[in-house]
Length: 291
Image (cartoon, rainbow, N blue to C red):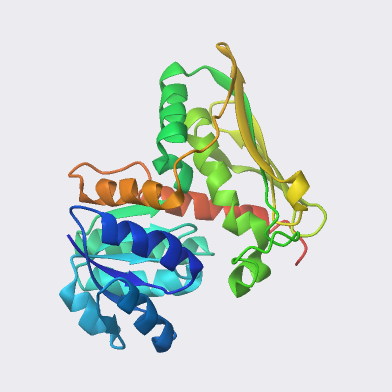
């Protein structure tokens, strides 16, 4: 499958480009970015072509992998779908439910496949754990906590990201937390989201699920490195289970996402799931004071 890469930032260069170049059934045929000089540098590193004309790149591709801010991603992904390209997208797919639904509708009209890269859903250890809990069932409560030091002094390359600074952890790592809880606990009721802001960009969520279960989420980029950590657990008739640590590097997980896009069957982490996650984040965000 011939891929075009849209984006040139740290996530694109460290994860997407590396995985696409290494994948035995993918060919990275070109790179496009909002900064042509960065596209040229990344393309040269991976022995492919930098494109200034996005439409020319889309015409050469079977699929696009997108590593751009969500609102930029959504509009360009619609353009890619209309050009007949399958979509390997980043989370969140957009920052409004209406935009996410426009994107999903464009993909449906064009008949192109979609996969959204919720990292933990494509990491072997955590993906296996999530699949096991879906089979076990009977879960009545859950929690997911993402304590990240991106803005807390970790020297992260993502700290300078304007959209992360504007939207905070809710939109950046909130999708990861939801991608773990929703498969086991089911969909959230339309009015089943309560959100409270904590220190910095910290957000606490309480979720009421359609099947009667409840869950909590805490996400933040504002803790110091010593306080960082990721954890999730479920409680129910089978007892208490805790999510294992992710061991595979992000580029290995992205390789599995490439596999999923190439597979004939529809993946659970498609645009429909991306739309549902966006709607939940939007409902939470509407309850919060601005950062």
